[in-house]
Length: 158
Image (cartoon, rainbow, N blue to C red):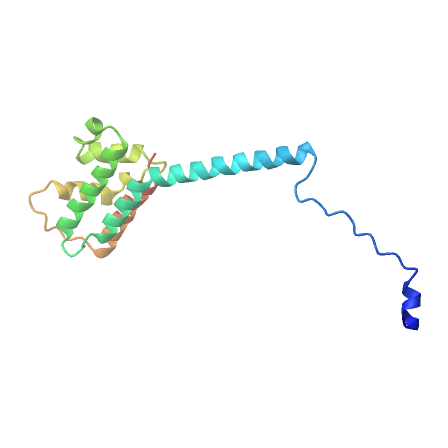
C-alpha cells in the first residue's frame, strides 16, 4: 500500500440518511388529498355535463353563422326558424311552437335577463316575416344587429 492509503484506514463509511417518503404519514394530509380528489372529480363531471347540455346552442350558433345574407327575406325566415328550433328544444314544444309576432317576442324577452327583443328592430323583423311583400330593404347593419340579438339570446337564455 502506498502512504496515502494509511490515512484512509481509520475512516468510517458515511451513513446515508433514510429516504424521504413521498406519501405523507399523517392522516390530515391523506384527508386533504381525498377532498381535493373528490372536488376535482365533481368539477370535471359538472364541466362535462354543462358542455354536453349546451351542444344545441353550439349547433344553432354554427347554423346562424352559415346562413346566407344575400336575400334579406330568406335570411329573416331562416333566423326565425333557427331561433324557434332552439326554443322548442329547450322549452315545452306545445307552449313555444304556436307563438308568433308579439307573443313570440314577449316569450323571448322573458327568457333572458335583459329585454333585448323589445327593440324596434325585433318588431320590424316579426312584421316582415308575416307580410306578403318580403322585399323590404334591410341594411347590413340592421341584419348584424338582429343576428347579434338572436345569438345573444341563444347564448344567454335560461
